[in-house]
Amino acid sequence: MPDSGVLALFIVGLLGGGHCAGMCGGIVGALSLQSPQGGAAAILVHLAYNLGRIGSYVLAGLLAGLLGQAAGNLMAVQNGLYLFASLMLIAMGLYLLGITQFLTPLERGGQALWRRIQPLTRRFLPVSGIAQALPLGLLWGWLPCGLVYSALTTALASGSAGQGALLMLAFGLGTLPNLLLAGLLLARFRRFAQARATRVVSGLLVLAYGIIGLFNYWRG
Image (cartoon, rainbow, N blue to C red; front, side, top):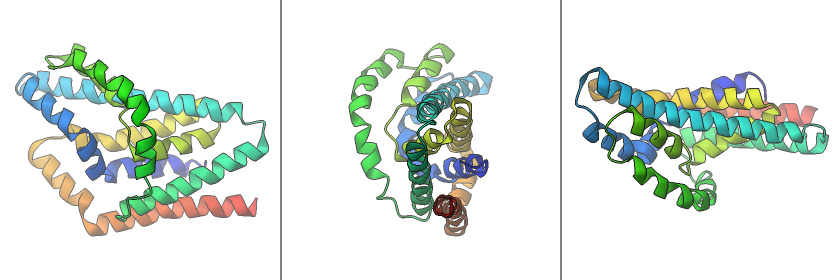
């Protein structure tokens, strides 16, 4: 994928905030209630959780990139992955525009893996410090999420472990403000991220990345 894919995935993570809050809001709320109250200790707990979560995204991106790299010598497969990734960028653009049904089947597909991982999260609850928050974040990074899976198709099509990890890092950093910030600042950011004009502009931008990818595919 072109380098613009990094920016596209960052935008998707940043402005797909309503979805992220819905998927991970419960655990973030639990962290707020169970972690040390206020001050640097509470901030470190939330940072550790998000570091673990984004670390899982990066690992998944690295593995997806390796898989794409293994198929790199098969031109037909590589072209197919590129086409699929472009279509998923279009789906993510439509998600930002408010058309969400394209991602639901992807989330259903990840339920089998999550049923095995979810029981492990109980070992780290309640969260009393970084020692619980970091591994909890690593586990919750595998929560079935259509946005994450869509981003992974871009990492897969990159055909590079390093590029796949970078793409998922960009996505993960985009999700960070919605799950890390608290109080008035978070409320203000959510109003901006969920504003109709913001979502339309960002959705059209990501949609354009996907369409450009399709154009390059058919031209090639």
